[in-house]
Image (cartoon, rainbow, N blue to C red; front, side, top):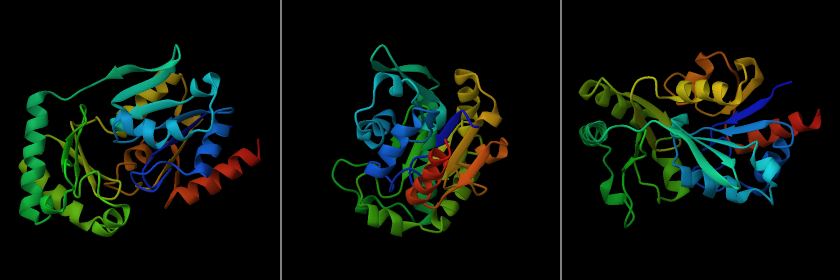
Length: 252
C-alpha cells in the first residue's frame, strides 16, 4: 500500500489554470484520510490555494495536516501547522539569474516567432518571476482556457523556444509544462529536487509514492519523476485522475 499520493496540477487535477472540480475536490479530501497528499507544480503558492485548497469541502485541521504543497516544482514547500500555512523552505534564484533567464526567454520567443505580447490582457505578463523559477506563459495567465489549449497542443512551439533558449543560456534548464508554459530553472531544481525533499520531509521511500502527471514524456516537467523510478500514472486530464482515485479509494 502506498503512503503518498503526489500530483502534478494542470491537466492532472484540473483544466489548466482553473480550480479543481467538485469531484476532484471530494476525492482529494477523502484521500487525506488515508494518504499524505502532495501536489507539486511550477505554479505559485497562491495558485495552489485558489485551485486546490480553497476548493476542498470543509476539510478538518487533521486532514489539512496531511496536505503538502510543493510549490515551483518543489523548490518551495508549505504545510499546515498551527492553523495556518507555513513555508518550510525556499530556494530562490538570485536577481541576476532572474534577469538573465527573463532576457533569454524573451529573445528566444521573439526569434522563434512566438512572442505574443499583443494578445495579453491588461495587467498580464508573459514572463513571471516565481522566486525559485522563471516561467514563460505564452498568452499570459489571464488568457482563456480555450485559447491556451489551442496555442500549442503538440508542444512544437515551446520545443522551438526551448531549443533556442538552450543555445542562448545553456547554464539553465527549461521544461515544458501546462498548456503554454516553459519553466526555467537552475540545473537540478526540477521535480527531482522537489520529490527528493518530499522523501526527506515525509520520511518515506520512493516505493511509498504514487505519482500522477500528464507531462511524463522526455522533456515534460513530470519526466524527472519517472527517471527517479517513482511509480507513475500518466493521465490525459483530470477525468483520468478521478477514475484512478475512485479505484484506489474503492479498495481501501
